[in-house]
Amino acid sequence: MGAEFVQFSLTPMLIGVFAAVACALPGNFLILRRQALIGDAISHVVLPGIVVAFLLTGTVAAIPMMLGAGVAAVVAVALIEAIRRLGGIEPGAAMGVTFTTLFAGGVLLLEQSDTSGVHLDVEHALMGNLESLIWFQADGWASLVDPVALAALPPELGRMATVCGLVLLATILFWRWLVMSTFDEGFAQAMGLPVSAIGLGLVTLAAISAVAAFDAVGSIIVIAMFICPPAAARLMTERLGVQVAWSVAFAVVSAVLGYVLAGYGPLWLGASNAVSAAGMIATVSGVILGLACLFAPHRARIGAGRSPDAV
Amino acid sequence: MRKSTGQATLALAAEAGRTKLPDPVPGDCPMAIRGLTVSYGEKPAVFSVDARFAPGAMTAIIGPNGAGKSTLLKAALGVIPRVSGEVRVFGQPVEQARDRIAYVPQRASVDWDFPATVMDVVLMGLYRQVGLLRRLTGAHRAAARACLDRVGMADFAARQIGQLSGGQQQRVFLARALAQEADLYLLDEPFAGVDAATERAIIDVIKTLREEGKSVIAVHHDLTTVRRYFDHVFLINVRKVAEGPVDEAFTEAALNAAYGGSLAAPYLSQLELAG
Image (cartoon, each protein chain N blue to C red):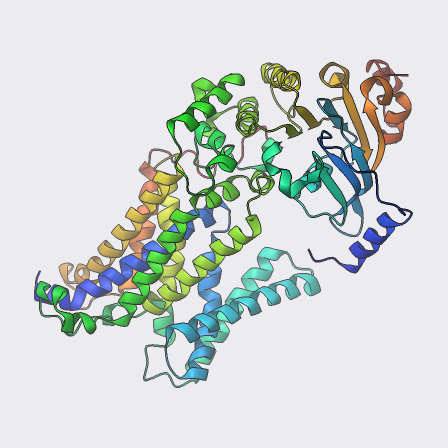
């Protein structure tokens, strides 16, 4: 574990960790608000937005992609409302139809456009390109203090680290707002909290995480990281602060273990090729959730519903 | 707030016939409402309601199911949007009087599986003191514990809220409101689905509040306890039916008007009605 690790595995692993943590943090609150599928929805809806942004600008840059994703989200909300009202269809079905249709549209658009020069095709949209985010200039741990080598770090690393830091900072700064408006919105509003803005802010934060992570690791891991680590963490504790800490730990373990298993697991089993890191990370997070369901100390509470005598 | 044309029409209808502004609301009036209309669709849930609650009183808001009792409370607080109407709390707009109001929502309105302890919930009542970022100190925890003590729940401080009975959950909500040290307490169905011990504990706390000069307004559904628990009533069925001291306003005529004559005579005779 030396030069080769730093060059080929360190940066993808870190990007995976930052992406997983950035999604898991807002995921805690989305799950408690019963909006867990918003992460799923966002990761689907952003695809056509990102593709259109690429077609218009010709580059895979962060700002246009973010704008494209934002426009796509607005279009999605308008479509859901239109289907619900004009078609008289229940909101859940209207959302499902809209998200999958937009995602499918994005896939078709992607297939038709010439994106051969960049990391933007159907495979990357689903699974990202984690394995290719390597650090060519590195030749060992010493590169971590070598300014020339550091300048050649893949830009995804800085982007994902920034987003992760932003999400972490927002979670800490607005902790009381998030907790109070998630637990008891009416009370929070009576206290003078801007509950609508808090809800919108949370979804926006989730969207920023999703778009940044989508760029680096694809939509599979985005969906998994919004839900699996927080859901597993909920089963470990009855305190929200502790839950969020567990969710971060599970996200980190999923990213590191998933990356290692994808790269070396098949070799240990005698196969010759590595498997998709994003796929393996999502799988590991799912296994952690499964284990938590079976063995975690507070598993009895989740999904128990409201107290039986509540109306 | 976006208003549909139906809601705009409703607002106009609610305003019709009002030619002059009401008298200024004195600063000791805990809550005054003028022309409050709320609608979830085309049909109003609360229509053009005026109310003036008495200071230092315990007022029960009563009326049949769907009469707009909880809606009136929530709209007055700004928890749900109002189509029209004005609300004054101690003579001020409600937004400027938040420090003086404590609100106890319906117990069933939250998810009790939420990962929080009893202490966590009561500490939320101190939000106006600590704000977004100030640290919680030992003094804050001691204050929260004292509030739990008042409702007989001090031994449960470290318990996860989902492990409590319905009555215990209701008492935790009341303790959170006590932590706010408000002058006006608004309670939405505080006795719904609670055990007898909790009902007694809650009414004892409310009576103590009145002795301290606070005002209490509670949405209440059990007509048989109105006379024992409250000194004022406010009857509503979308529109205001009657308001005033129990001795004057809690009459058979008012109840028949509010409940559309659906209350049986033997039942009415048990209620120790006025007049």
